[in-house]
Amino acid sequence: MNVRIEKDSLGTMEVPASALWGVQTQRAVENFPISGLKPHPAFVRAQALIKRAAAEVNMELGHLDERIGRAIVAAAQEVIEGKWSDHFVVDPFQAGAGTSHNMNVNEVIANRAIEILGGQRGDYTLVSPNDHVNMAQSTNDTIPTAIRLAAYPLACDLLQAVTALADALQAKAVEFDDVIKAGRTHLQDAVPVRLGQEFGAYAQAIRFDGERLEIAAAKLKRLGIGGTATGTGLNADPRYHAAMVKRLSELTGVSFVSSGNLFESMQNMADFVEVSAALRCLAVTLTRIANDLRLMASGPRTGLDEIRLPAVQPGSSIMPGKVNPSVPEMVNMVCFQVMGNDLTVTMAAQAGQLELNVMMPVIAFDLTFSFDILTHAINVLTRRCIKGITANRERCVAWVENSYGLATALNPYVGYLTAAEIVKEAQQTGKTIRQVILEKGILTKEQLDRILSPRAMTEPGIVGMGE
Image (cartoon, rainbow, N blue to C red; front, side, top):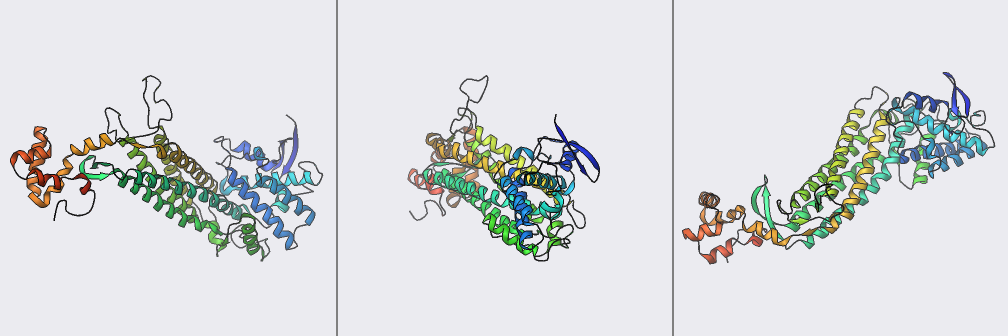
């Protein structure tokens, strides 16, 4: 392999000649062959946005030579546009705080800027990763800022998916409004409900989760860039912080604001914990809905078979004709992963000490990972499952007619204890509630027709009263 020799404070090291990264990145590659994973593209883009904005601000403030600064801006923009993605190679499980990732970005941009200026990769006399690309910055303020820059647009994407899912569920609520089905609590017979009411509740729950996420995501707009190493802003122009917030807002189209306390910005990861918690809440709701879909679609001959899910693939390699609830199963697995990621984010957030949280790389990775898989899973759930669900109306009616939950409507007329005895006898004899009542002469057929109206039971009030 062709190599070049680079030097850092620890000495010299061979770096692949074709690599835009440099010696510090190479050390990280060799030190941390942990997962084989790479940083999320949004996180790389966010870090490059910071480098571009910093170069522009430092030029405006008179601290960075314009020839070097323009080359850095051009190189950073290439990274922002997705070029050189193969050169961001540091494992997410790396040295604390994210120095390795920060230097990976610094070195790639520096070497590309060197080429733009006509030099050779590794000639840091032209453009220095530390002195020029990282000017007025530290890992300690750029990494938490990059998490915010990466996570906010991902949150917007997820919110769009959430809205589309809620709309699809609400459309089914309207479509299924006339479908009466057996209600179930504790997985036992309960009073009837309409299938549309169930789907309407799902839609509202998803909308509430979207509201939680939107509130949490808004706090990602608070930036602490400019705090440098510990929050003091050492080696940064006093005007730098405000100028960076303004420039990053211009570059992204997002109205970012100052965090108001640069020390807090690198010590406290609570905003990320809150966002992750909102993702966990969404995952809890989604997995509950997915479980309900699987249960209502169970069978078809030996289960509830109240709804039919779209058949997306064969369900078995050995049982012919079997079709599984594949999409809800996928959603369950995604949700479990998100819940685990949330625990990791929580543990990492509490693991900071004094002026810095050193666990930011895993926060960055798990947060962006959760956004990605939730967004994709919800989009698939909406398109390939929810929109194609149909109701098995005949089976729903059959379950209602045989449900002991119908006896609840008798309470105002015969009392709870008498109604309970009717249910008990129906269970022992295999007769329906209606048959037992008529045989005992407790109520007339006309009275029963009014009282045991499944549709009427799905609305507030006392069924049959005043009719």
